[in-house]
Every structure is written in structure tokens, then in C-alpha cells.
Amino acid sequence: MPEINAFEKISNAYYSLTAAEKKVADYVIIHQQESQYMSISELAEACGVAEATISRFARRLNYKGYNAFKLAVAHSTAGRSAGNPLSGQVLAEDGVSDVCQKLFTANVDAMEQTLSLLRPEDVTAAGDLLERADKVLCMGQGGSMVMAQEAAHLFSTAFGKYFAVTDSHMQAIAATQLGPRDVILYFSYSGATRDMVENCLLARERGAKVILVTRFPKSPGAALASVVLQCGANENPLQMGSVAARIAMIFVLDVLFSEVCRRDLPACRARRRQVADALSEKHL
Image 1 (cartoon, helix red, strand yellow):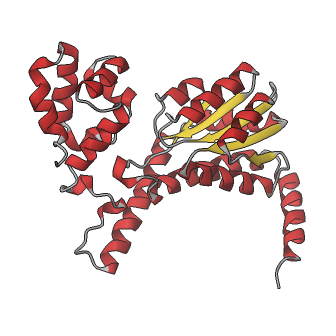
Image 2 (cartoon, rainbow, N blue to C red):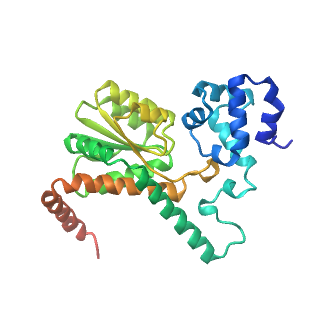
């Protein structure tokens, strides 16, 4: 039996909803394309209701939670341009030149959005934490773990205190060993993964600081972070881990690395020269 369209479910259940839930239903129906990109906090704010109302609304429609509802909305709009599962709105009829141009535009847009969202004072605050830290653990889940590994690699070319922790169990173990002079550099597009929230709570209990790179500054993870660096790039649930979103995060990483390095460029150059000399022996 085919899955009922999300908007049909809303229509069928509309008159059984509470007044607050009807606000959510009205907003989602009017903003079908936009709502699939919104975090639970953003949707709650747009509708003028509590986040708990959004969760109840999703469960009333027989979805396990908000993320499942948002995925259903994406599936229900998949026949339209904004529901396209491919980044840059690539279509089946596009030629290679069209694909290249669309993806180029999407990636540039992601960087421009990030540039407009990054606040200099937040970059400075994050740089201060990293500069003073005894140890920096780079973490993420899923596709964001790739970004954490990239961060650890990049910073390790100039500093010796950055380490990627890739396994979720090892992340929890490492978080319990942190102290007040340690930092977690976390990458999470949604800012709302269970492991990330648990690890941030463990870090905070031990006085460690958290720098979070995310799209959503009002997410559960952002509420636990010491500093939030916001990246651009919208993606719907069908575009899991889009390249544009990663490019936005890489841009934030590049800004953060440059901010820390520029504070002592001579020492940074010397250390990177030593690393380059060591790595040169590995080339034929």
C-alpha cells in the first residue's frame, strides 16, 4: 500500500489538531518547500509555538519524530524542483555543462551564505579557545566526521594538539577524560544528533569547552556549545551530506585555521616547514 502524502495526512487530521498544532499545519502547507530545510527550533519560531508542539504534531500524524516528518515532507515534494535529491537542482535532462554550472553555483552560494552568517566576534572567541587549549578533539557523526578528520589533519600541519576521534564509543570515553583547558571542535550540520548532545554534556561536566560548526544556531547542540560558528547551505533530507554543505563547513574551517595561525605566523611557518620536510621523504 503506497505511503500517504504528508500533506494529505495533515489535511485528514486537521480538525483533530489543537490550536497550536493547526498553526504548524498551516505554516507547513503554505511553506511546503521551505519547511523541509528548517530545524525544529526554526519551525517552532516561525509558527510561534514551542518545540514540544512540533514534536506532538509529528507524532499525531504517526511519524516517529520531527526528522521523520521532515523526510516525509521532502518525499511529498520530490516531484518539484526544491525536492530534488541532487545538490544544485541537477535534473535528468541536464547536460554535463549544465551540471557543472549548477553545482558551481550551488557551491559558491554556500560559501556566500556562510560569509554572511559568520560573525567575526565568534571566530575570535573560537580562536581564543583553540589557542589556549592543551588538547583539541575533533568530532562529528556520519558525514560530519569526515569534516572533523579534515580539521585534525589541517591543524596538525601547524600544531601538535589536535586529534580526530572517529568512533562514537571512543568519543564518549575521550570526553570523560577532558579538563577545563581542553576543547572539542564539533562538526554537525543539524546540531541535533544524539551522540553529539551526549558528548557535549560530558565535556561540559568536566569544564571543557565546545566549538560547534553547524547550520542551525538554535539547535540542541548549539545550546551546549561555548562558541557556535554558523555555516550556510540549505539541504533537504533527501540530500544527505551534500557537497555544498561540506564546502560551507570547509570554508569555516579554513577561516578558523587562518585565524589561529595568523596570531603567530613565524612560529606557524616554522612548524609547517618542519612538517613539509618530513613529508617530502614520503614522495618518490
